[in-house]
Amino acid sequence: RLWVWMPDVPGLVNALREQSGGSALIGTVKQGQLVWLSGVNAGLPLPAGIQNGDVVYLN
Image (cartoon, rainbow, N blue to C red; front, side, top):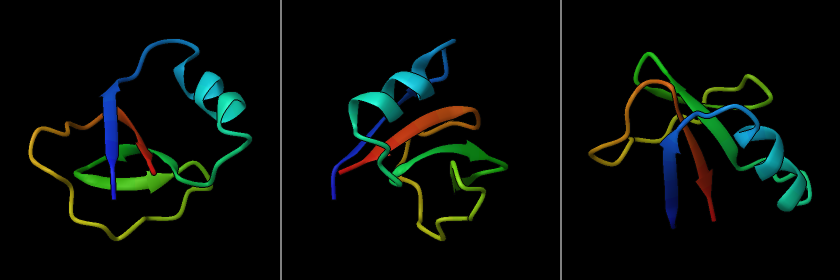
């Protein structure tokens, strides 16, 4: 599984959603947990370096 992440910037989530064809594998990190855009907790352990507020795309 490939993890790509970066701090959120205005328009990032919308651009990822558009470019990925609406992928369900886009989320944000809240309180140390990856939460999909649908609001469901992913239940996955985060790699080192991912911070609260980061946007994550899994492939």
